[in-house]
Image (cartoon, rainbow, N blue to C red; front, side, top):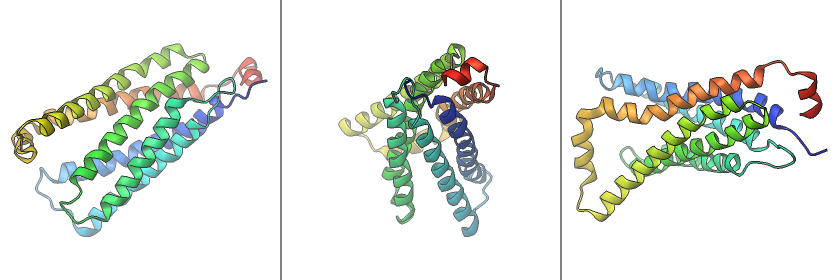
Length: 219
């Protein structure tokens, strides 16, 4: 019989992804709320925020590792493997950026962000594959929206990079000009992640449901 580990992988990996999103969300929300309010973060708070983000990134990596090890009919998912490798790059860049002086890590941070979004786009395709193996086509279809949004975000980032590279554009001035549209930019950034949370909730329900005798025997 071909090796089947997709149910075990989901039950082990999905809670780690949930914890990771909570921690990563906190690490983004605290400075995002403090800056508009004019509240400077003390050094200990800034370090705590960074540590929270690093823990979240580590939890995401462990969850992706569990999912990348899943087998359906003895075969793994190239998309889940790619998601794991891309998040390895995200965590490595996050740790490297912490060693840089303030103001020196903008480019590294941008690459880190692109790696994170590319990893999540790959995760969406892999999760749809896992859910189809769980005989949950409706829940698998939910992962299409976040995948499209992550790919769209990456396409916009690539277009912006090409515009800056090929045109006579001062990126710093352009970013300053966009500062007045901060709310819109936050919506564009958070939209794929919000869709990811919705899809993840559906996947958690599938993974936590009671198994029938047939499912136990076949998976």
